[in-house]
Length: 475
Image 1 (cartoon, rainbow, N blue to C red):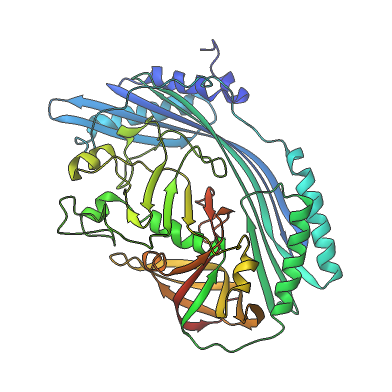
Image 2 (cartoon, one colour):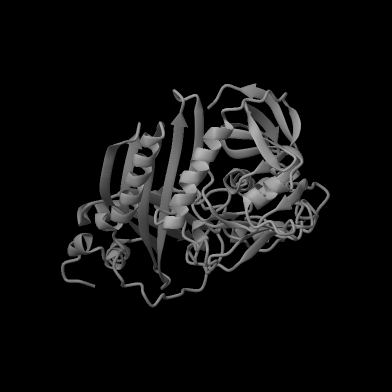
């Protein structure tokens, strides 16, 4: 460790900070998590740049454990810090809180310590120059929009969070998680027409920018023809972004404890575990998985959580992660389970993994793009994105929400115009049983969950009988 550990704040040496904090703890055991986040952003409205910025934040979490005759207590404290005094305050606050805490219900064996080779590497920080190319492309898109009477709104974000985990048991883990995001809303004709596009990337190629211009123009043109469609059950072609929001909602409702206690759609009171693990819950064509080594959507290869919850436990920090099939060929294979819950319910341990992939096999013959699905659809509605999803009934996983920025009417394999927006009521689990066609999965940006879910790969899908309950004035 450096003789002057305060220098680690300037150098991005999160490993040094974690070691220093760990040494300052007086608890029986301690976990220290250091996160250094480098963030760049640009925002624009009415086709003009409004704000841009660059930030660097250091967050330290100390998790103190107090072992006693009646069990082991745990307490965590997290703060954004800028110097050693703040870091030490966090550690001492956690130590004191652990002494005052009751024994933890989620206490369990700590994982065997793993030491990552790159633990001492510094944080990955982003230079504003990395936005030069996408900014230039965005400028060209704005110029094109102005020439065609189209206003552009949106934002571009590039973020890199480097995380270090050091434990008194000897674990030394490090992972760098990039998170990029580009969202563009295009409006025309006195803002009576609107379309949205989102990407979990900012470095788009020339072909992608050209395709974006084409798609924006095409979609706004489709909206010139307004077609009255009554609410009800309609065949729906959901974009990868739209189905992604439904699948993420389902994933975050897939806790083993909630299922066993009857709080979710995955409950079965007759099963020994109280869950539907091992039962068919979706179409046999459907697989939902998480894999930290997925090359399209890589995520942290180890568990790191700053506080225990119903789906995560600080006792599991540092545990190595591997691919988990939550639903495999329609069968529920796993639910999110901490080590303590896995033992309590007699199921396999399955920690949260920060990535989700939906695959539908076989895909529609020859359907590589969403346009291929349009060509195969005789009568339906194409939904580009959804918004404001909220749970109506957790025991059936019923959600309500709104469509936004373009619902298109498809007849005979062609888009013939645009419908209004709708409110919908439907369940992700039910929808996964009603998929009749799909493309291959690709990385996407779920619009509703974009702030929280960046590592998502989804196909475009056709869902039979989606329940559109009422017309919405949302644009």
